[in-house]
Amino acid sequence: RGVIGVDVSTDSLFLVVLSALEDNVSSVYSQQISIWELASNTETPVLTEVVPAGTCQTVVRFHPLDARILITNGPSQVFFWSWENDFSCYTPHFSRRDFRQAIGQLTVSVFLPGTTQAITGTSDGAVILWDRPTGISASSSEDSRVLSAERVAVKIMRLCHHAINHLSTVSCYLVVAGNDGAVRLY
Image (cartoon, rainbow, N blue to C red; front, side, top):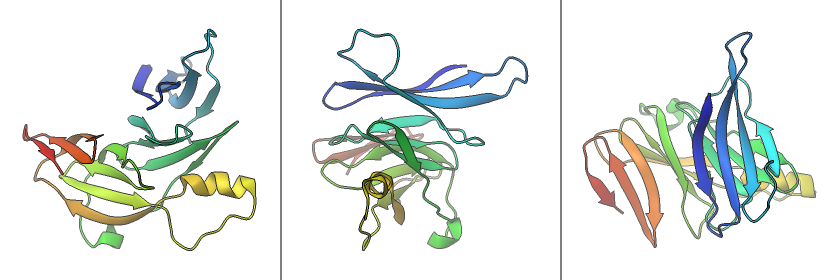
């Protein structure tokens, strides 16, 4: 089914591709994330991992300061990925009841540079702010790998009245573009 999302790490060392593979027999497709080292001459990825079954992801982004941390999202779920020699992923549980308001479908995600935070835009003009939970300490290297990807929904903020289609950062500004045709800088 092809490529769904692509990103290049800030240091230009790695390329990440989110793709969908179709099973010709059952017409069911699964998704995978592949990491390529750009300086390498090989035509195979350094790492490939299948996205958990039953989920549909549409966006993939590197963390701006640590290429070993990724975020993906689809209409209803966000995954935080960590990779050293293999992939591990963390899916934060959040409920619309946690925020006591309706939350639209998830559209796009980005990490906020210089922080442990990320945001995800929604189809109703809000952003969900994700951050690491407080008060957690890792006891083993495996735990620390999973915990480096762990995030919780901290708050939701309405930034515009229409769907958010693009999120990026430029210097210390958050760039938000939506269905209303406006580009906003925060």
